[in-house]
Image (cartoon, rainbow, N blue to C red; front, side, top):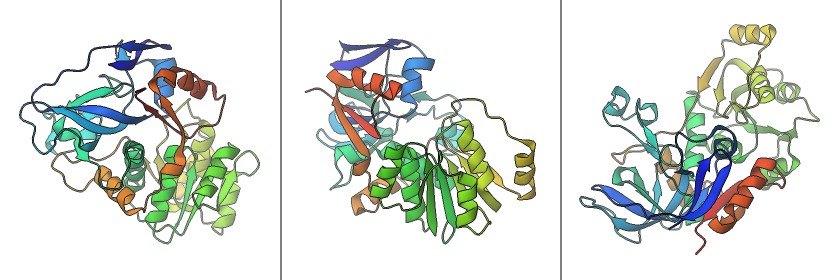
Length: 350
């Protein structure tokens, strides 16, 4: 099969590799579309994966191509999404169904081969059917949309009737903004430094968007909230300025959720730390999303239901659909920021 293989940091090669074999309880999925996560760029060009060679890509949807022995509930041709974390099933976290806290997990696209390819093999427990009316393009964004939903849920406080501020208007930030709106926030304030991202936010129906290069975010939040600050602040960019702005914009008793992957060390002024203490602010970390192997309600199923009902609008986020043959060039453009992009989807060449 055709695959984009990472042989070393920055060493991407489009190659023919063997189609992955099926074991008992596994399903082979023909990739429809695989999104490029913000974490994929440093993984490919800076940090590397856990071993080489590796096929990256963990945000994907496709159709069942074949089922291994013992697989029930799926058949060839079924449209599916795949939770990419492969839990060990034996640690205390797994025993409680908290797979994202697994002590010894594997991961498609970083520890094992992922979906910048024609096929992926995954345990049947990691598959969810795609609802009728949801395209594979939309379904391929289930993973980041679930991560964004999980961030709002991590705040452990209702945004109903309260202001929410989001710092970073990339795909995850815009998805988080949609969830805040769906969950009843009185208003959603969005901040970024890229004009095209702010324009995309406006196209999605957000009016309170601000360019942090020309407007000071903390002052904007205070002005919009009568000096009370935001009830929930989501840091969705991972850069020092957005950390400081998110922490400086939260109101008394409010919550800050750290969602963006940190790009650099962050130094916090003593005065800001003192404010956080006096305001009794709660700071939450978030990573990944909740998933139920038993088929219970979780972040993934909530996302798919929201897509199917039209509550969650993700198609406008897609700026590029790129075949595997052109994927290396696109990934280099993303690294170099040589053209604007929001959600980039990679798909098999044929």
